[in-house]
Length: 334
Ligand code: AHM
Ligand code: MG
Image 1 (cartoon, rainbow, N blue to C red):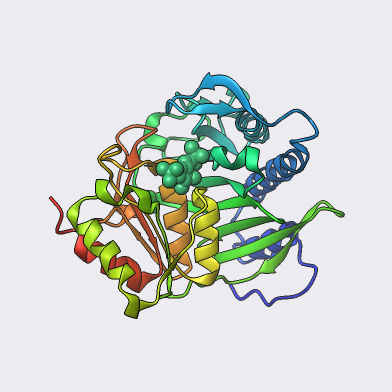
Image 2: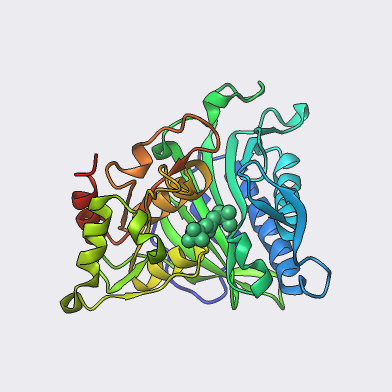
């Protein structure tokens, strides 16, 4: 669908226009996106006031990943659950913060969609006022509507996603939505409380001079990964680095400006650190629709199938040519 950039197109209007191109569509996807956008606005408001409302710092607990839980993690998770549980559009939610999948109440078993979510990516950056975000992926359920959703609805390849996106809470709040219609960005006008189309038809540059990587782990990387990093460091290539330690912030920068992000296997995390269902799948879906690529160093991310809800994966993601070069070197690794 061609969406001309016209000032003042709200997310709602954009979704309605998109839907109009599909006469058979029921509007459930629009409702789902409205719920996600509402949760994003609520989290954005809290993030902006966190220092004033006692929401900075940890809860003293650790989550299913063994990571310290921050108060804003809890708020973001609860907000997403509430937004998705009672909308009638969703039958199951898989969240980074929850060990088990969340099944929506029985009267919403008719929900068509399964949502995977990292409610607040970049938790370690909350207390320092650096950019954080919410990442989500959307599957259409496999089991019959009206029945209880099962793991079969979510343990499946990333290429089954029908949509993915994120909300990034930076100097402003932006929602990025990728569907079969491409990748579009919407900026929140906090005075109006609406997302407006601001980044239509995002395409990521195929090459760049930026890489995003925690280089301190260099000596923990497998040989092929080190060989690739060595190449990036060659002065004639002219690369610089950008790495904040919030996947979605590094990803967003690279998506718009060009760049390759790597979180490879390390000696400490041989499967990588990032989670397949709610970090790697959504970002891979988005980058592919923006003309880029994503692999685990060997295989395309969207071809992978998780074994469990919280599987981790190495992630190499960004401009197509850069990801291909990295994957060629990394795939020689044992
Ligand atoms: P989380 O905040 O959801 O737990 O995500 C993990 C974060 C990613 O956002 C980021 O890319 C990575 O951890 C940074 O890890 P490291 O500090 O090892 O570089
Ligand atoms: Mg995360």
